[in-house]
Image 1 (cartoon, helix red, strand yellow):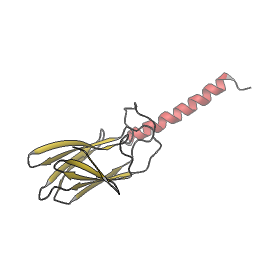
Image 2: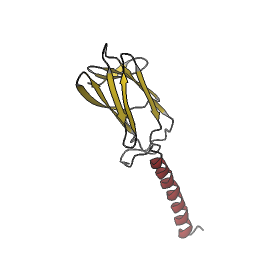
Image 3: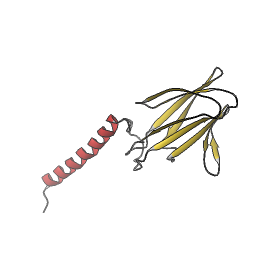
Image 4: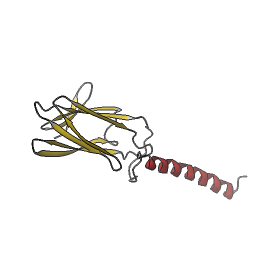
Length: 143
């Protein structure tokens, strides 16, 4: 018969391993401290492409998450800015947001929300009316 102390030790080892993985992810910047969402087992790299689709206008893009500032990038018409990252392994909390500036207008948009976006290759066209996520058969636009 298994004693209570053996079960407690096994449970302790499992919890220690679990939290060690979480802390390793936090150190690498892939796990948010906000863990109120559900568990995710997808850990493949996500690639984001932001395309300036505003005819004859330059677009300034500045994207970041809670831990990483990806800097400011200026895109001419039809130029693309790409970045990639590993989303949270255990919880769907990874969030990248961008500031878009053109001709004196400033707009913000969550370019990647792990609990919304199920993509590995996320392609966004940025229009004056808002960003549109490109899918093989349709586009999903946000105003």
